[in-house]
Picture (tube, rainbow, N blue to C red):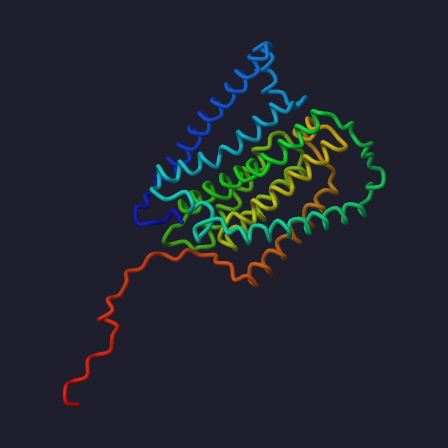
Length: 317
């Protein structure tokens, strides 16, 4: 959609640079805000800096900072597309262009079905019976605060990542590779594969099964975004995935370990393919049934009514 009448080859390149610069500024502002708030509580500033780089102990304020920092990518993406491409931010959301809320909530329901299928399949995998979940964590005031933060800010965090990877980044890469001599599918798949790879690598150190899990999420989400013409499908699945991860960590595990996870078993690949496959099939079926628009309607010059009107009947005929 960035291939408009004012497109230039350098705009996607400079746009990514502008996005990174704006994102860095926002992160610095939020980080110093976090440190200033901690200083009001008479905490050592050096400890606050160390806490920002160490997620072993996730406090409510640190979780809030993380989610708001990622959620701020929505505003950064909006500013970038407005400044660099002179387009309204809503064009990042869908081809309509706006958030199609009915389709979004349907996708949330489909995400639940896909997650249930994932859990059911995981129960039959070898070694699943040996997994020690542990007892229910102690219910404290901190747990309540963390749960509220997860509930209120995780949708922003998930949407922020989608606006970056499946929104602005996928559009810039796709527009840059949309050569007149190349087939359309080439630009699409270059954009999908590139953003899926960058999305997986952005999560830090990880073994191959975990990388594959994140890569497949980016691959399926990117493909479905193009097939449905909007970010709703990616945002819905992303939110449900993060809710499940955070909820499980708060109830049975440790939030710090959940954010620092770097490896999973090879059987997780089967679980990943199950969730991605079920979700993709359901979304395609429902999108077709709902007649979801997947392409833009470019502006067309209106014909003069007189040009389309039938010729006048001669008098006396």
